[in-house]
Length: 145
Image 1 (tube, rainbow, N blue to C red):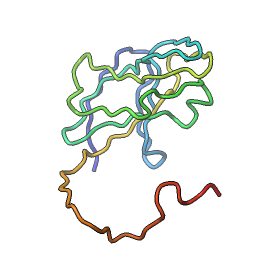
Image 2 (cartoon, rainbow, N blue to C red; image 1 turned 90 degrees about the horizontal axis):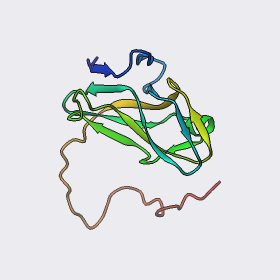
Image 3 (cartoon, one colour; image 1 turned 180 degrees about the horizontal axis):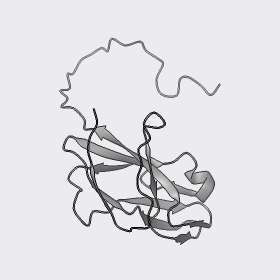
Image 4 (cartoon, rainbow, N blue to C red; image 1 turned 135 degrees about the horizontal axis):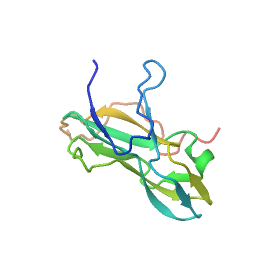
């Protein structure tokens, strides 16, 4: 089912978001400024958009697969979660990055991606002494090969 999301652009020169049906479940976000970073520096890169996400949904923001290769940055929080209440006129989205090498990111470079996800359903935890699933041997038990 299609969902409508209101979007505000903070700059009329930033490329508009585009959902390409059947190509990807993720939508690219772009840097809304030129950024020069030295190795080890932290920066909040503005993404040039704010959105009204429907109630009951949230946005997950993660690096693109080529972000590190192309720009040498890692996302400081590894995955950003933007809930539906972050929806005001000044609630621009940002991606927090740490430079692993000296780098330059240009205005309109595709720097990260997002998708809209349904919120966690209400969960009731039921305590037990034994789980019915197959025992895989614990954390790290599958080896490296």
